Amino acid sequence: MTKKIYIVEDEPLIADTIAHALEKEGYNVCGIADNAKEALYDIDDLKPDLILLDINIIGDITGIELAKKINEKFKIPFIFLTSLSDEDTINQVKKTNPSGFLSKPFNEAGLKSNIEIALFKFEQKKEEKHLINNAFFIKNKGELIKVNKTDINYIEAYDNYSKLICCNKEYLLSFTLKSMTEKLNDPNFIRIHRSYLININKIDSLFDGYVFIAGKKIPVGKSYKDTLMASISLL
Image 1 (tube, rainbow, N blue to C red):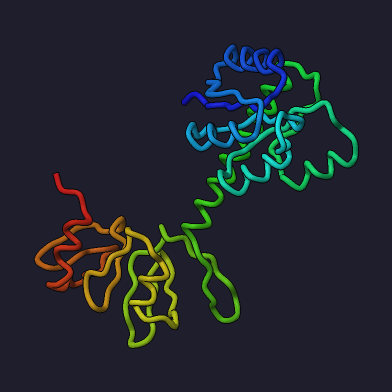
Image 2 (cartoon, helix red, strand yellow):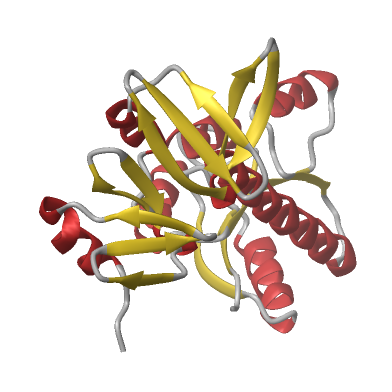
């Protein structure tokens, strides 16, 4: 998919040169602004993948202040373009955690490589966050053990405890099944019985009021049947 780049630059000739260079490389220049107010409006509307941001721009809001607002509101990666490289500017820039920093004048190769690296790092961070959201840690004899949600087959209630059944391990947790449902907060995990919470992706088959997961025969409660059937795909 073609990446959308937004340019914030108050020198029209430089902005047009950058836009031409980006389009030649196959990027989609979705917008150009010379001030922060216009840029914020456009960014909210256009949702670019990356922003090229000059530090000195028209208006009361500087590029550095605009960067802070982008971090707060949009979480979109940005690269600073500037002719400034004094220590004070660099220290201010570092606080905004930019995805890149290019000193003017710069060449097309440097511009492209900075963009590609910035986009790559941003995608990596998104993937890492996704992995974190799909895993959790549990205490086991003083050790913190990482459990991936995708490894869980089902969870069985034991009074005020829950037994977590994974592909090759079992863990006894001091949470009720209701509490485990709330903590997982994942549509892939559904109650099918007052004593069972299952990972629907682990179902091998359903037959005669039972779900079969990794050789385990799990009953389906009458009040949970409709929820189960609505959660699976039938051809």
